[in-house]
Length: 367
Image (cartoon, rainbow, N blue to C red; front, side, top):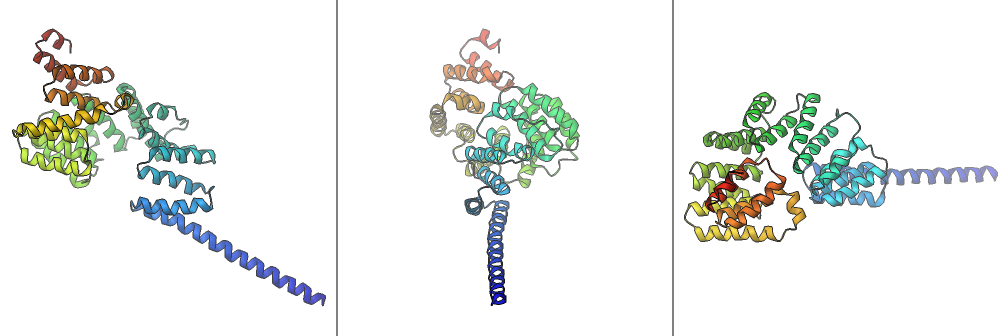
């Protein structure tokens, strides 16, 4: 009888353990499936599907750290930076390596225009990993967004020494030099990075920008088109291409390029401003004025803090008033923009022209 009882107990124990093992394995498989499915969906830009899978995983295992990080990345891809920030901060609290999270958290902060918070992140390590390099690039962009172009250049030059074969660093530097109208430095850097960046759409876009500033619009058009062959869903490149066509007097082609930009970003104030210029040059004055009024009305309802953090909005607003011949408004808006962007030579030239229109040459001479 004792032997029977021991045997029965052993049998029940083994059966229970086997069932537990099967159950645990089944759960692990489901969890792995959820995580892998989320990864695969995210890699294919199926962000809503990825969101469902990762939420399923985290409901069952809220402490799943890789899942937590992936969740934050999915939220970033869904253009939800505030929610992504919360998830990355949660991952850090759960013990995630800061070096693996800093780029992602910085991206979430930057996309909310929290530039000071980007600069306040603690990155003690030398930027040798890809993640830390990307953080340094975002950090430079934050300096630049705050109007400190020299700090941005200094940051990028330091990173260029550590990563001499990284085209991203050089391309960011070139972008700043072009913004500052420093064409010699921009041209020199483009020549240095040419062999490394032939497959980079941004390289061809920046070459186009340089050509446009040099008033070589045929070359600019060619380079913008090359950039679009490599990355066709880029509104900024279509807008630049439209501007080059306008400068070249090819208004039909400019209109086509702008339609492509507006298809990607329908309410983009800059795209609508360029459209107003096309209307103006094709004698559609009423349509042009309507477009300018639309821009002014849209920007007027944006709060001052958002405008200060996105200075391009101030510039577009000033240019809209300039194009509409509203000189007093133009002066006020250009000065508001230049207060935090004193190095923008193009804006200074336009402000000078406004003063001439108002018969105030003495003020124009100060620009």
